[in-house]
Length: 336
Image (tube, rainbow, N blue to C red):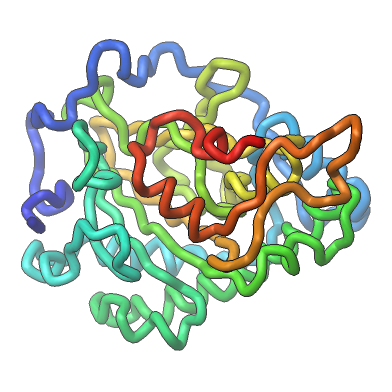
């Protein structure tokens, strides 16, 4: 099955199994190239202003970029470098790690869910569970040799940033600072190291089609040299151009539910190009599987009844993985 990986060979033509129907192509010429993307400087000493900026971005866009976020630059650069080194490993080395089973805690795979989808996506990815580290790191790739140490350090830093952002998002909703962190329970943390090889026909396929994230919060480190992330705003796709040393934050479905629909889980997609490969590292903070999720009681009232029913993350995540990635918003299945 590992021969399905697209990073093990150079492709001069796009295989038919990746070609989207005419109505489902990215239409790259219609993408807005330089839209006004919310940017939040976390070094601003005026916390109230930062909280207000984050709240406005969560409401209007469902995502924002952060500067001066506290992740050391050397940690970010090392993570990106070791990710590139991983995807340069030999096909034989990669084949040892390949799996198309979404239930596996560590797997190298391709596209999104090759067992279910009818059209594939131009992406290989390494999926890792990251919390608690001592439980999962022994299963991580042993090559390249620095991989485990470098990615462990990155995971710890990202987790702390996620919890800082939770506090400010909670405040922006008028909730106690620790509300989100507490209500989501002992959170899991996953990582997807995404590799998008050069594509011979980028106008015919996606790296990933339009989707929302099923988790609570996603922290994305983008390749600063190659753009590819796009988000949907008022019916138009907007290119998110990399900013030096910035991280992209996007709200997942669970924060849309917790906010009772006030904040948006952003529709986003990854497009590919024919000139250069692209790498990104996505870190996902996920609720504890067994906790009860749904709108915060403080945000429910006569004038704002609950939009979503209560459920567990285990129930939600299984539903998400049972569908195609680009079907209707999974949260629609949990409306009251």
